Image 1 (cartoon, one colour):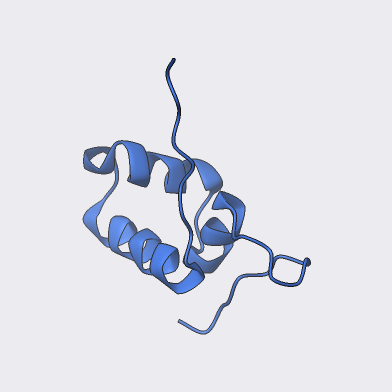
Image 2 (cartoon, one colour):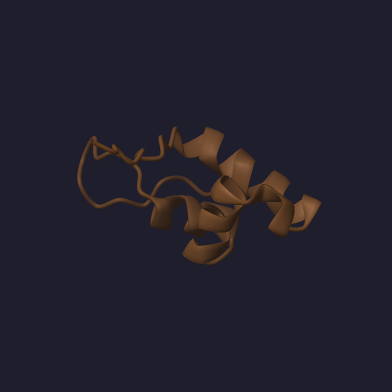
Length: 65
């Protein structure tokens, strides 16, 4: 995978959009892969998860109070 995180800010935390660009998919596909993996084709899921690792993306979690 030759693509890297394309965030213009030096040392910026990678975003879901960065992951989508690296994986070659839409941001909603990244979101579905992380939230409902069964809704995404296995090959696409693998590409997205590889991009997550390559970019060191950490999804934000919701906090319920």
